[in-house]
Amino acid sequence: MRRFRAARRRDSVVLATAATLGVLMLAGCQAEAETAKAERTAAAEVGVLETSAGRYEFTPTTCAVFSEDGFDDIEIMGPGTTPDGESFFFELSSTANALSLGFGVEGPFASPERQLKAGRYESQEFTLARSGRRITATDLVLVDEKGAVINGGASLSIECGAKSE
Image 1 (cartoon, rainbow, N blue to C red):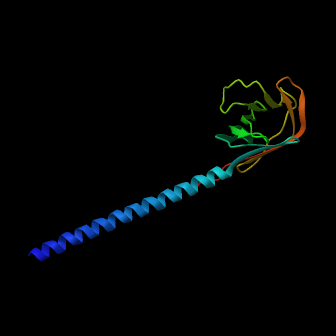
Image 2 (image 1 turned 135 degrees about the vertical axis):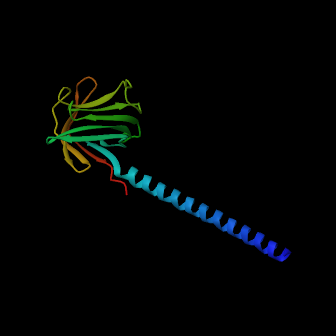
């Protein structure tokens, strides 16, 4: 009888250990899958403003695209860095036909001292083209916070993210 109880106890310990290891392995695999998914999504959400001064790269944290009756309402914003490493916050609105980069800030509703702007009321109206989740604009006329033209042929390319698996 003692042998039977000892064998039963040993079997229970072995099963409990195996179950624990299985759960840990499953959790590890799930964490790896979540990390890979986040990396794919982050890599897919990229914005680049190409200017004569270089590439202004940003990561859209808000990327809203609403289409109705052949009209796209596009609102995009997110933090980024200039070619020389300075931080900025990017904002784009298709309905306002406005694009802005606020330098030295990393969030919306800030009041940056320096800005680059483009659009109907700042410089020249622009047209956004959309193909799936990719949004582009060419021949952007960028002006500074005083309205002086800084760049007359900038281009914008934004990938708002791939659909998750």
